Amino acid sequence: MQELNQEDFAAQLKRDDQAVLLDVRTDAEVAEGYIPNAQQLNILNSGYFMEEAKKLDPNKNYYIYCRSGGRSAQACMLLDSLGAQNTYNLIGGFSEWKGDRTS
Image 1 (cartoon, rainbow, N blue to C red):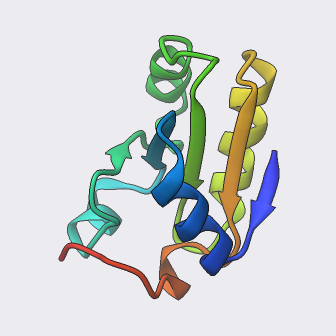
Image 2 (cartoon, rainbow, N blue to C red; image 1 turned 135 degrees about the vertical axis):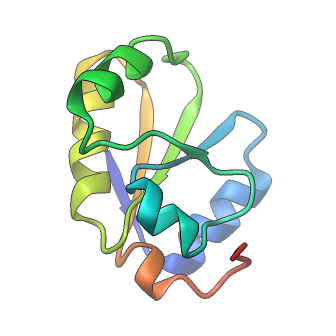
C-alpha cells in the first residue's frame, strides 16, 4: 500500500491505464457525491467486501478512498493480503478531495 496525497493520487490515477478506482464508503456517503468512474465496495459490509475483493484482478492498480482515509487504508491492506500488487490510499479521503466529483 502506498499513501498518496490529493495531487499525486489524481495525477497517477489519470495516467494509469491499469487503474481501478474503488470507493469503500457506505451508500449514504456515496449518495452525497463520489469521484467519477469509482466503483463502490462498502467495506463496512465486511462479508460482501471480502467476497467481491476476492474477485478483483490482483494485477490491476487499485486507487481507494473513503471519507477521511482510514477505511481506505484498511481496504488497501485487505486487498494486499489477497494478493493485489499495487494499492494506493487517498490521504484525507473524499472529504478533502479537490478534483472532479459527482453529486
